[in-house]
Amino acid sequence: MATVATRMAFGHELIEIAKTREDFVVCNADTKTCGLEKFGTYFPEREFSFGIAEQNLVGGSAGLASCGNKVFLATFAVFASMRACEQVRTFICYPNLNVTIIGTHAGLQVGGDGATHAAIEDVSIMRSFPNMTVVQPSDAVSARAVAHAAVDFKGPLYIRLHRNPVADIHDPATYRFEIGKSYPILDYGRDLTMFVSGILLKKAMDAAEILREQGVGVRVVDMPTIKPLDRVAVLKAAEETGAIMTIEDHTIYGGLGSAVAEVVCQERPVPMTIVGIQDRFGESGDPELLYRDNGMDVDSIVAKAAALRARKG
Image 1 (cartoon, rainbow, N blue to C red):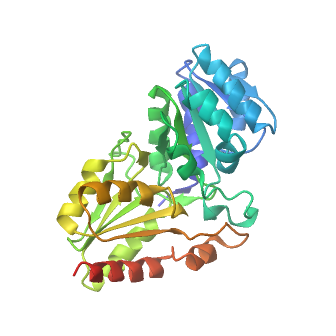
Image 2 (spheres, rainbow, N blue to C red):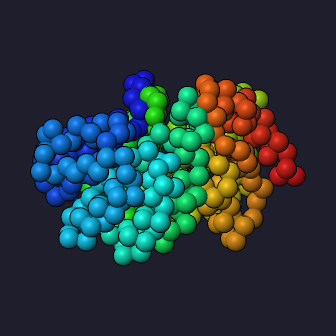
Image 3 (cartoon, helix red, strand yellow):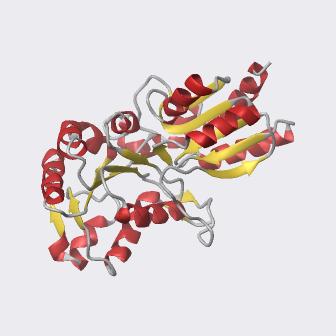
């Protein structure tokens, strides 16, 4: 299986798209986020660099969009969601402008960059803004597909991307991305459903295989769009399997787990478990050790799934 970081797959694909489409521009922050720092080399009249000044980056992008441009801006997710939070809310979401925010280096996978650069709250923040759509691919295949969808998308869009290479899950020959849709990956039975957003999809699949050997039938569903959520898929899972687990490289507060729980508790209450970063900051270190410490590794997912199944009664 190919191993390419979602951020690089997305950035390189956007450059390829730009070779045949002239209807968008890119704004950069002078950081090596997703390969788009090379955009100006190919298209000097369509790239604008704002330096390490993310609030100005967002403000300038909003200005370009208000003049009728489709704008992509790229920076670290932690800076896009927090340093420029007010600008995203007031200058992009409130006027409903056509700006796609590419937030890279998300979650505990950032590892050695430490707490200051690990974006673990960004989905919570972006999901709370009216007009904002939130998307997170799980591998390079889906990241490339998201790039194509983003060019045609109208309105505020937040795309969450990851630092390190990850194995491909989807088949490039058959995968088609649609905003607001989920994608079934495995179906081993009716004991519980795992909804996963982002790069922990492979861990969920590995856990499902182990559980299958233990006699536990698990369904695994990729949920690349966190807002708007695929409510139909969530309600179907609640009805057919009676238990739901969410898995994400993000705080357990306000992300995918919260979005799914909002649907479940209001429309089809069933036992739920939210797997993600506990009430703590990111740290420097090996991402796999950080996942283990937060109960997000394969063994922890298996144990939590078994406990969830037992709660069904």
